[in-house]
Length: 407
Image 1: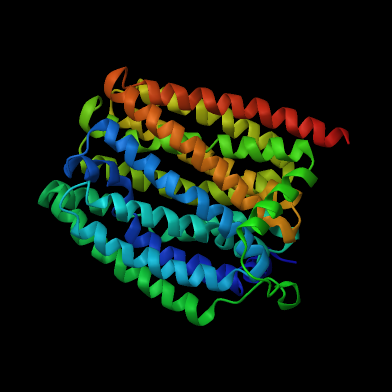
Image 2: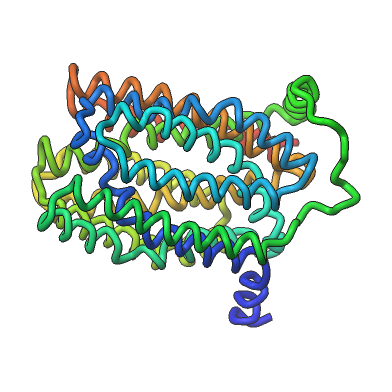
């Protein structure tokens, strides 16, 4: 089968639809997401409160992830994805109306709850829609496609922020995010198809007891080596709570002091490089194996964070952030592909939920620790912690895979 035919086959149906609709969402979202930390600060948040905001979002996702994983495997994926996508779209209006960061606390909690409830179904419907023979390439396309839509958005946003001011621009941009995301929701409503067989969808009543028993059963019947790998993939997420919120603050406000437009340019560059390297990563993983590339990506990501700390110019920041983006993206693709290989279809919703719960707990710990230490101890501490975490993950992944291969 030619590469073009493989690509057409992968993009046919749900994967193509989800890629396109997430691309629309991403086009608008990339105008606000790279500058969220600065927006919170403009609304009066301190550095510690910035970490607190991230942790509140993570906390609000914990319980719905448990429910979402159960509902996904019991009642299907489609309705959960569609209804909660509409909620997440409408929430952008409240981000635009915020007079201060305290106003956003309930908004952030609802945002986290809805995204947590949706995530297992969201990832399960994508995993179900990818042919097992082309799984790494399929996940690469899923990561590649939406990013393509938002390549130029951060740079455009950065230039506008420098001209009209951060706070005013962000409020307008959130309305734009709402419009594009609502369009994406409508397309999902009309065209998204269920992937879980109707015969396997039970009509049993919702029960918290059933949810707890179902998750305990999954954990107790899954091999310890796979659970270790599951934990390792979740631990890698700590960097998104510890390092990610402070990259822009460290680079624009506090230490390196580049302009908002330059940060937008760097964000555009990292997105463009992700687009270039994502299919290359997928191709290499099929040639040399996913594990080797995963370990390499973890190590390079760790080194890139250290390089960022010592950056003194826009060139240094661009190189370090680009390396970080390319290889953390590789980590995500390879982890998801490996977990999909290891977990049976009927258990994927719960597996995604458990991984996400662990990720949110670790991100919450990372956010609170990073917020406190960035403000009171050292502005480099969150980055050092993140770098060391990735090295630990590389060690744990190596151990888990060696044990899996022995049996």
